[in-house]
Length: 313
Image 1: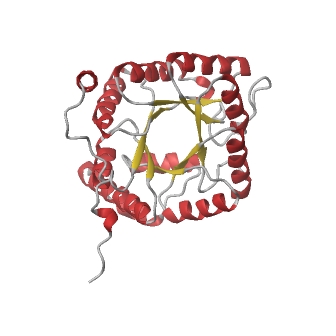
Image 2: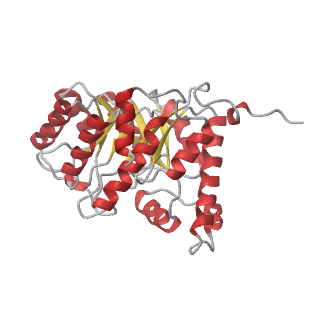
Image 3: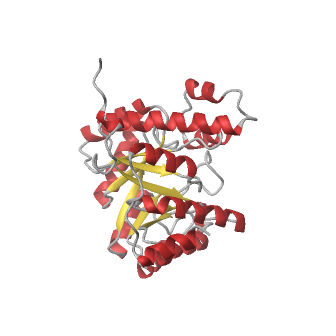
């Protein structure tokens, strides 16, 4: 009989597993309710941090800032605010960094950002702004004492000529002060492992945290992947084939796919995950439960009990 793989049956905390969650700022009252219900559901899992995205050209700047401030005020979570250098001067971006620091934010996710005309269009740096993500990281570290995370691309950034060039950019971001990278989502773990080998061979030692996207909607995921430069394996498309009008089965398949992926990563020594929640908690919560990342059964402090109840309304 083959040996039991301990990674499937030992509590996540004992294995040293950790997670972080990504949200986007809501546009409507209904989306706002969904976001805060999701935060309330996932908060008891005590993630390392939760990140809040930032639209192209700062299009969601105020909503991002408001969401981050509310997380700081009403929860025990550590927020990480996304920041890009698209269509803004250095002075404007520096003002955003100072505003986050004054609000109590101690973690920023620094990204170049997408072109204003959309993914696939040519990116042009603002003539008076930061030129790229490495330049932005250096600017953040100059303005405030803030932890900086960045992005990484196992299948390379869509604008990069090669994976090697992409890794050179990652190294520049690390040299500028970044201490963690979260990857673009992927569905074939071999991309992550091959990429990690090349990153380590280049001398980069910071954590390269795999980004996991549970498939809430396969058609949307396929479109998103095409824009982001992530591939959809044929086997994944086959899993969802014929389920367009069967949401219940789609959810079961999505949970199974994500479970297979994260268990394989854990079995290969991965201990930290960054989940792209799409502001929905159900699949992410289930995957974390499977990993053994579960809410503490002991009573929460009174203040935290209030925060969780408020978020869950």
